[in-house]
Image 1 (cartoon, rainbow, N blue to C red):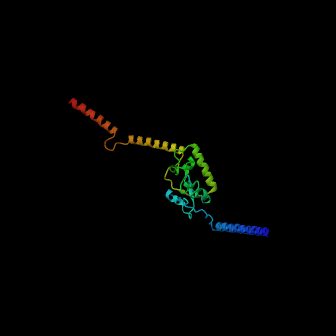
Image 2 (image 1 turned 60 degrees about the vertical axis):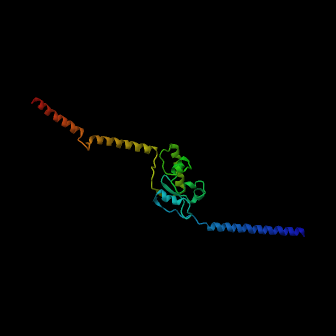
Image 3 (image 1 turned 120 degrees about the horizontal axis):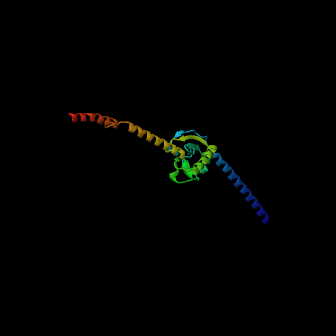
Length: 203
């Protein structure tokens, strides 16, 4: 009698356990069915930094976006990384080029300014860009508010500026002063006045 009751209890527990397992399986399937699939990427065109911030993951109805070198990518499929609470959440809704290049998580580097970056940092950024290009859809561009350039471009800009300054200086030298006669006019006036003085002396 005792053995029979033990066996019955074991069978009941086994059935109850199976029911719980089946219930949990159906429940997890229900949760999966309730989760909405990721919508296809929407092309945004050109937007500014403030508009990009609206796609930082705080609104679950909006796609999750971030930018590299002014190019905006839809990273919604990697919400666990770039969404709220994720390890890279601070990059979402921003052009994180400088931070990615420097492997920095500081607020001051969360922008698209590439000035002053070294070759190693620019190479690291290039690797990130290739990864994003191969994995995510590009959906727009960021209106540039800071210079996005490397060292070579800066050098060229400096040379061009120096050339323009030199040209401006030469032009200023050739142009007569606005508040008086030019040096050549003054010289001619002095030379013309000299014979008249000599004639006064002779008289």
